[in-house]
Every structure is written in structure tokens, then in C-alpha cells.
Amino acid sequence: MSFKTDRLVALFPDVYAAHEDGSLLYTVLDALGAELMQADAAIKDLLKSHWIDYARGGGLDGLGALLGVARRLLPNGTPEGDDTFRPLVKSTVSSFIGGGTVDAVKGAVRAALGLPYDLALFRQQLESRSGTSSATDALIAGLAQLVQVEEFAPKLEVVLGSSLPTVGGSTATLNLDFSSVEPMPPRIEWTFGPGGGRGLSITLQDTGAGVVADAAFEVPQGQALVITGSTVAEFSASIASTDVSSQFRMLDGVSPPALPAVPSGASKWVFKAARGAVFDASAFDRDETFDSAGFSVRMQWLRLQPLVFDVIVPYFVSAAVQRLLHGTGYEDRFKLFKGLSLDAMQRVVDNSRAAGVRGMVQYAINLPFESSERQPWEDQAAKEQFSALLDQRNTETQDASEALAIGALDSESEHHDASERFVIGGVYNVAVFDGAFGFL
Image 1 (tube, rainbow, N blue to C red):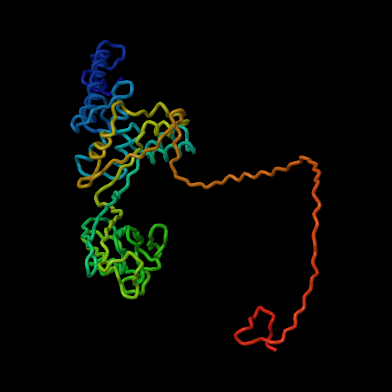
Image 2 (tube, rainbow, N blue to C red):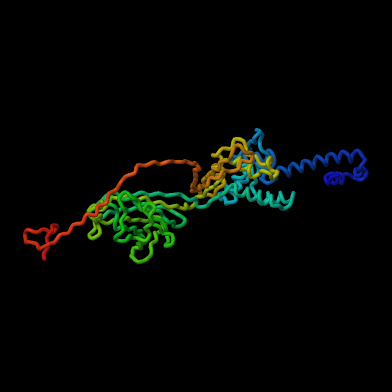
């Protein structure tokens, strides 16, 4: 008996005996009360269907249609259920109200992949069933690492410049104007033409900071000078494999060298090279010119872009999910949806990002071995190894041989002839030094 039946029975006088359970009138009123209870439940469900957390079936489909979201297809071709469609609808709401947090973006991407939207809630569900365990912690940590969000997406900027040889010296000016979250150190590659480079200096004109080379320092023609490091400890200057950092100072000529960092906004960089031939330094047998050498400059640095973030997901998402879930007992619970393309990830990010912020999807490629069921990842780390094979062999010969030598006898003669000479004297202009003459 429901409270609807009690209220209907109370409407009749006692003479009708409506309150007696076995009477026909009570049976009719009880059936009518049950119908009214079902009508009340339907009205309550209708009211709750306006909320994403409570809508089911067609009501959830209607809310998704208002947001332009439809149910995805499972690998077998059937539409997904409410448990996975609901997080997708919730993740789409942020695109209409403007404002998506890092967790919201991660959850939206995971929901699009068919993974849990809220990892904290998923952990509670696992712990309520099997309690806390290392396997649960490993699974949650793996799901959290599967989708990464990198704020202030880095971008490699490259600016090129060149200068023609002149009599008074060569100069190249690079005008930069890039917004960045923080100043970043540059990498400068300075290549010189015929005549080589001497009297070098780099100046950030806005602040007056920069470095200068010693007067005797010279970069040979065709060689490139590479300079890096925005601090004294990090400063490095090299030509090929030769370190020439000790040849540089700050512009004051005394302080240890350090390159200025590339600031956010506009900046002007001036590269100068003095004349090629210098008195008391140039040599006749060198490839030097009276004019300064022409050069080219390549300047690059990593810029942290404001209002831009990267979402990093595995390129082989299915293999990554299978590897993550292997041995956890959830291999059949999470499956990628049918027809999910790489472009779909970008649309999900666009729908979940905050207003005025740009998000870009980056794919991490880890190549699996196709022959393994678990598909372990291949190690792409580069390694160098030097090995030498020493082969030494000693050979000893035990061959025996006999020889008989018969030789001819020869005779030798010895002469004991002796001669004596008596020198009387030498005559000027007649006697010679190697003759039988003497001065006495």
C-alpha cells in the first residue's frame, strides 16, 4: 500500500469500508494509487532529465543534441552507454560557458578515448570494490600519464641575418618581436666568408649588454662560431670541436662573458666584425683581406608562448591503452570508440579549452613490436659505444733440420815491409806537405 492509496481511502466515509484490505473498493483504490505513484516517478524523472548527472537514455541524448554531441560507436558498431556518454556531454559544457581548467581538458580527452573522465572518482570506485593496492595506484598513475597538458607551449624560433664585406667593418642587425612568458637564452651560429672574422662583438641594443672577442681572436674563413649560454657558468663558444670561450668578455672587456637572454617583445641585436687585416696581427701567408669579411648569422631560441598549451597523447593510443591495462583485469572495460580519428582529438580540445586560449594536440610516437602481445615499447635512446678486438697469435715451429757444409780453404798473405826516410829540409815553393821533405 502506497501513501497515494491511503489518501484515496481517506476520501471515502467509513460506511464504504474502503480501508479494509480485502474489499473490492480498496483493491480498485490501491491500483489507482499505484498508477499515480508511477506518474509521480515519471514526472520526477522528467524534472531530473534536465540535469546531465541524472539524465538517462533519450533524455541524455536530448541534452547532448543541444550541445551538438552524439553518442559514439563502440568497436562492434553499437552506440555507447550512458556511463561513457555522460562524461563527454559534461566536458562539452565548458566550451559554451567559457573556461576549461587543466583537469577539465585532460578529462575531456580521456572521455573521448573511452577512459575515465574523473580519475579521483574512478579510484574511489576501485577502492570500494577491492580496497587500496599497488595495482590500483599503478593503474591510476598510468591513466594520469597517458594524457599530458603542457602549459605555455614551447616553440623554436629562428631568425637569419647577413652582412656584406665593407672597408670599415661588417654589421648585421636582427630585429626581434616575439611575445614570451619569460626570457630565454639564444644559440648563435656565426659563419664567416673569405678573410675570416676578427674584432667580433654582439650587443643587445635595448639594454647595452653583450659580449666582445679579444683583439687577437680570429675565426677562419668558412668556419662557424657557435655561442650559447645566458649565464657565466653556461657560456660556451666553439669553432668546430675547439673551445674558444676564454677569448670572450663582456662589453666592458673585464667581466666574464654571458649572452643576454631574448626578452619578450621587441629587441634589436647588433653583430659586428672589424676589418680583416690588422696591423701587427695580420700575416702575409694568411687568407686575409683589407676589407672586413662578410658573414651570416643564425639565431635560434625556445619561446614559451603565452595563452597556448599542448596536449600530448600517444600516437598509437590503442596500443598504449592495452599496454597500460595489461594484467589489471580491466582489459575489456576500456576500449577505444569506433571511427575515432586524430582530428577528433583536436576538436575535443577546442571544445574544452578556456575562452581566448589556444590548445594544440601533439602526438608522442613510441613504436611497439608487432610480434609481442603486450607490445613493449622500443628504446629510441641513442648510445655510442667503442670496442676493439685484439687478436694475438704465437706460432712455434718444431721442425728439425741437418746441414753439412763443405767449404774451400783460402790463403791469406801478410806483408811486413818497412821503409825509412831521412828528411834533410824543405825548400820554399818546391817542397810539398805529403812528400819526403821537412822544415828542419
